[in-house]
Amino acid sequence: MKISFAPPFIDDDVKNEVISALESGWITTGPKVKALEDATAKYAGIENVLCVNSATSALMLVLHWLGIGDGDEVIVPAYTYCATALAVMHVGATPVMVDIREDFNIDPAKVKAAITSKTKAIIPVDFAGWPCDYIALNEVVNDEQIKSAFKPKGTIQEQLGRIAIVADAAHSFGASYNNKRTGSLADITVFSFHAVKNLTTAEGGAICITMPAPFNNADIYKTLRLWSLNGQTKDAFTKSQAGGWRYDIVYPGFKINMPDVCAAIGLAQIRKYDESIWKERQRVFDFFDKSFSSKSWAQIPPYKKEGNTCSYHLYPLRINNFTEQQRDQVIEKITEAGVAVNVHFIPLPLLSIFKQREYQMDNYPVAYNNFAREISLPIYPQLNNNMCEYIVSTVIKAVEEVGV
Image 1 (cartoon, rainbow, N blue to C red):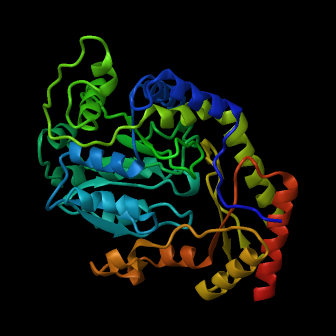
Image 2: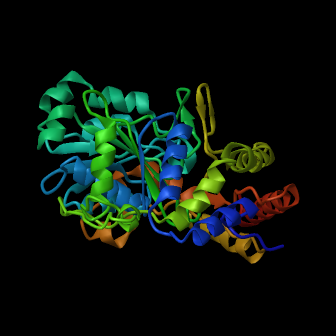
Image 3: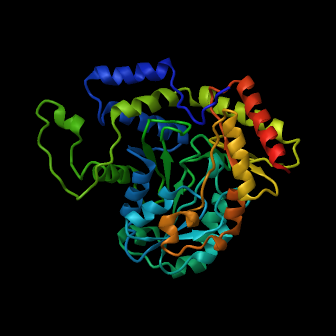
């Protein structure tokens, strides 16, 4: 049996929505993007969402809007995809890495210890779709001693008066924390709609804008939308209407808008997200959980807590007392049996771009320990129970052959 790792969820509704965009005569940013923004906002329980071409672009745009740049520091987990830190570097700031907790997510205590007078933002990452401890993170940035030491740069930072929390929720669309959905838990939240994500637009991302008073989030949306379109006062759709050709460029912006033909995929998916995507991913997750929970060598990923739910984006299985080399042997055996698996993630300090900047893996022992023992199993709606059983039996056989 051959099982792929993360194929997109494409059904007739998705195909029909894309065809609708193609037949409309308009395929770049237009009405379908706006419809997806509105649907995403409604789903997250907020009012203002901007869709762009990737989560990486979204993070860069947000950091730029916050006025973060040369000489500034942004705290990120050592255990995340490179884009979290690269976005910081792209605006000229320095990523300050901290270790994680056993649940894969950033450790608020480590965050607090890493704060300096240069710290302008924290980017927590909801690993595998399990939300970070946002209550603890908010307590850190609102600590009176930390707030009094905060040195704002620019009017936005002055108005906020503290370190910003910009959530990297690339994995957690559909998850909730303290009975609130992701997208509403930080100052600004970024979703990814990349091809392998729960909700996809092939490539894409979304910025959920929930800055506290006295910020006007509708105005922030307008500003970020303008900046995402080269600072042009009219988008291409508006310009194309009769008599609408005249425009101005009022800011040296970027070109990171989402096209309608991409938004169409996500628009069709979000309409059935809970019932056909999230629920089915939960089914697969629960199947794995029940199958592995009897194995003393298996460490089940976090997904249950009062008031919290997971998006079930990944199933990150950890093998107790395994080395990195043993884990790699298991992956080879699983792959030979026709099951595609992955590892999420190679910690940032192990990547060349960060090694060259003298980040040391020894400073993040929990991150390394999780990485060395982790195998991400396939999890998506198209997996039926027979396929899930094959995955489980293949993994168990491979682990026990390597030795536990």
